[in-house]
Amino acid sequence: MENWITWERVTNPEQSDQIEFRHEIEIGVTDHFQASIYFVDWFYERDRNQSGFNYSDSAIELIYNLTNPVIDPVGLSFYGEIKGGRQHLEFESKVIGQKNFGPLILDYNLTLEAEWEEQGLQERQGELQQALGASYELSPRISVGLEFLQEFVFPDWRDQQKIRNVFVGPNVAFRHQNWFVTITAVAQATNTAAEADCKVRTIFGFGF
Image (cartoon, rainbow, N blue to C red):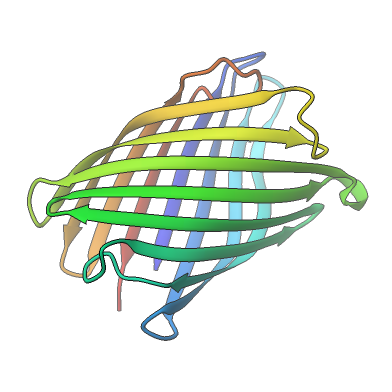
């Protein structure tokens, strides 16, 4: 089981804060296949005009592990997620690669998202992401690392606005027996309006 808490701050054009909450239950179906359910994704949002809690969506996630980075030269996985909520539908597909060099672990994710929102799901948007991460195991319990994320946003599936976002920042992970905590903080290296200037995400998980 994993619990996600993500804080985002936007300052351009106006300041606002949002805290997102996700609660995941993951089930290992086979050695290569796993499924997850996000029963309720919700968030708290505050700006100068209003504040309050809102339901976002619920989701189903499927992952197929083609190879294992521990025993194979490279770990390769395919990921799919479907989100649905009030006036919100989203499909996300991802290719995940991982290479281990002893205590150093490199990750690369290539993600394609399709999203529909608003009344009648008339507002649509596509997004292509690539993320690169590196983490180093200081001890069996502690790892530190760095993450880089690049986003290509396509409102109405068009590239006329040339929206490009880049985020970069550190992460740290703690593990002990059947639980773990991961904290990631990234800042926007570009200057896109209405996009988060910084994000801090905490993931707390434990196994049964």
